[in-house]
Amino acid sequence: AAPAPVLPLYLRYCLPLIPYAWIGFAYEFADRWLLQNYGGSVQQAYYAVSAQFAGIALIATSSILNIFWKEIAEAHYNANHARTHLLYRRTSRILFLVGAIVAGYLSPWAAEFLRLILGAAYVGGASTLVIMFLYPIHQSMGQIGGTMLYATERVTLQVVIGIIFMVVSIGVTYLVLAPADAAVPGLGLASKGLALKMVGLQIVQANIIAYILARIWNWRFDWAYQPVSLLGCLALGWVAHRAAIDLASGSWPVPAVMALGGVLYLMLTAALVYAMPWLAGSTRSQLLLEAAIVLRKTTAGFKPI
Image (cartoon, rainbow, N blue to C red; front, side):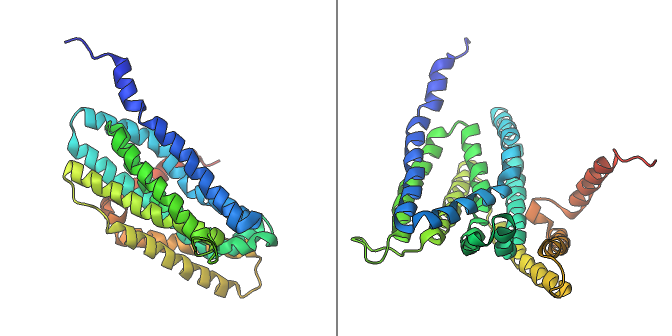
C-alpha cells in the first residue's frame, strides 16, 4: 500500500498547537501583569528571581526529554507496551527524585543563597524562593507526561488539558493576588501567592495527566513515590542544614557552612535512596551496579603519573 501523504498528518498533529500557543501567551502575560498591578515591581523582582533559580532543577529534565521522546515514540510504534511503561515509570521517578533532592538542599538555605548571589535587598523574597524550589519537581513530572502524549500522537488531549488549566490558572492568579478590598476580593499574597498557585496547580495537573496515562495504557496509577521522595528530601535537607550550622558553631563563612551542609545532605539522601531504591524506579542491586559503572567511567580518564 502507498504511504499516507505527509502534509495531512503533519497538519493534524500541529494544528491544535496554534490555539495552545495563543492561550499560553495570554496566560504568561496575565500572571506577570496581575503581579505587577497588585504587587508592584519589588514583588515582580522576587518572583522573577525565584523562577530563574528554580529552573536549576530542570536541567536534568531538559537534557533527557528529547531522548525520552524518541524512545517512547519508537516503543509505541512497535507496540512494545512493556518498554513504554518501563521507560515512563523509571524516567518519571528519577526526574522527580532529582527535583526533590535539589529542592531539599536549597530550600533551607534560600535566604543565604539570595544574600550571597544578589545581596541583602533580595532576602525579602526568600519565602517566595522556598516555594518556587518546589515547582520544578512536579513540572518535570508534567513534562514527562506531556511528552508521552506528544510522542504517542495524542496532541489534542494534551492541548485540551493544558488550555483548561491555563484558563483556570488565570482566575486563581487573580484570587491570590487581588487585595481584600478589590471589587472581587482576593488574598493579596503578592509573589508568595503566585508561587503557591504555580506549585499547587502544577501538582494537580501533573497527577491528572499521570492518571489519564494510566487509564489509557491500563497501568496502575503510580503516585506513592511522590510524597515519600518530596517529604523525605525536604526533611533531610533541614536536618543537614541544622547539623551544618551546629558543627560550624558560627565561626565558618556561610559558603563553607553551605558546602558542609551539602556533603551531609548528599550522604543522607544516598542512604534514603539505598534504603528505598523504588523511589528511583530501581532495585538496590541495579543501583549499585549503575553506581559502579558511573564511578568507573568517571575515574577512567585519571591515570597515575
